[in-house]
Length: 174
Image (tube, rainbow, N blue to C red):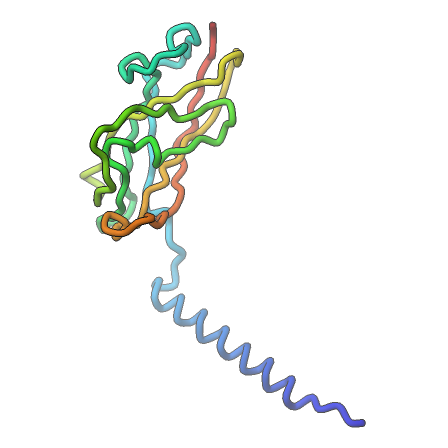
């Protein structure tokens, strides 16, 4: 019984040709450069000290521990996305299981289209909660997880990506 290798070689050659075509198309579409992150997230906390006693059991947003955020772009073109308006806390996550994003009540909410440019950032505040019983120095990051621009008109929304912030360092005391 003879084994035919010409079909296998042809198939491998066709596969290689298709792969090269896709690679050339990708490089052409991106001008031969790899894309940098479209959104840049910077956060600031009002204090480097988190006092558990001050934030224990408060549902009032004004008594929670806030961080301010600024979402910008390093791109020369505007970047578009959508996010929750009142319930923007739903667009944030943390990389530390001992830190959570606090929720608040929204009577009217929806997903709204946003845009940022280098000179026009998207700003706001979100509050965090450090798990009860945690003490000492803590380092973590938060991430903004917006939706695609067209998610303002579709449901469920499609996630655009996850964009991590600069590190946050807190000293947690009772």
